[in-house]
Amino acid sequence: MNSDELPTPKSTFEVKLSPRPNLGDNVADSAPNGIADPAQRVAELERQEQALQQEIQALQLTLKQQQDQLAETQATMGRLVQEGLRELEQRKQTLQIAVEQLERRQERIRTEMRTTFAGVSQDLAIRVQGFKDYLVGSLQDLVNAAEELQLVPEAEEAEKPVAVTEARPAERQAAPNPQFAEQSFQDQTKQIRSLLDRYRNSPDYYGPPWQLRRTFEPVHAERVSNWFFTQGGRGALRTMGSRLQNILVSAAIVSILRRLYGNRLRTLILANTPERLGEWRRGLQDCLGVSRADFGPEQGIVLFEAPEPLIQKADRLVQENQLPLIIVDDTEDQISLSLLQFSLWLAFAPDPQMPRFF
Image 1 (spheres, rainbow, N blue to C red):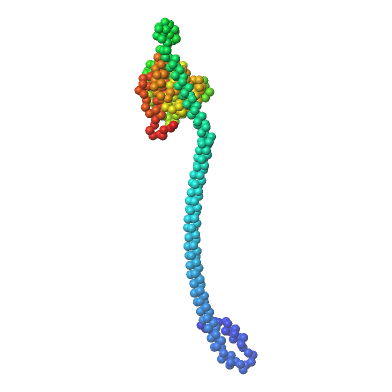
Image 2: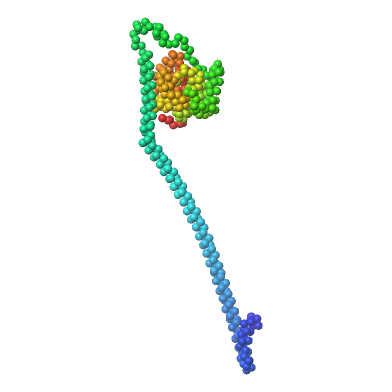
């Protein structure tokens, strides 16, 4: 490096000049030393520069490592947060399921409490009332049977043949023989279809007794139409799934037949327990608007727990030129063949794919 390019030595040289002329030789002799000191300083600065560059590189490397560690730490924290959120979501779902289970259990306990304390008396009252209705009907049947027994000696009975003859009207209409599936009954067919359309499209909830008073869906109309026109008023229908639905279908059939045959129609219900007979009585009262007075041995609807007295009653009705309609509950596992001899009978067959109701 040339000494002329360095301003610092020149400045130093100028400071050290003395006005005394005899010191010129000393100044000339000391000039090389002044030039040597800046060179060492430059070398030292270069060494410092290299050291600083190395330190900068080391710091840059450290910064990069710290940035990598920070990114890794952030990624790890993100994974931990996501796992924590998933765990919290699972715990939330588990708690929600547990709360729903507890709510259902609480509702079930309340229902059991109502059933145990408040509902038992009502259920017992319903059962007792149904059994009472059944007993009243049975007693009336016994009274009717006792009245028909020949307790008078034959001699006295022979002396009063006229009285026995006058007990019945001199002229009676012949017993009807419904044949809904035949072409000769076009008028009845039109009337039945008209009534089904009225029940389905324009229900009358406050109509006269013996008229259907409940909502009548197409599925019910299809069952009734099939029983009239396909089975000819004699056949079994698959259960609707509940006794109330079966009662609704039966009520529609009873209502239509009452419009066709009036008071000559007598409905005989067969179910194997008093409780089920009580359900039939309440259901028909609700669907047809009839009263308790319409139930009895000599009334429009008669309830039976066994098929034998029902068959006897139906035979007497036929002899009296009445029209019995036999309806069999779906809990009857077997149907007596004697029931099949009558003109009108409807049996509800249980569905094997559905649970039995009681």
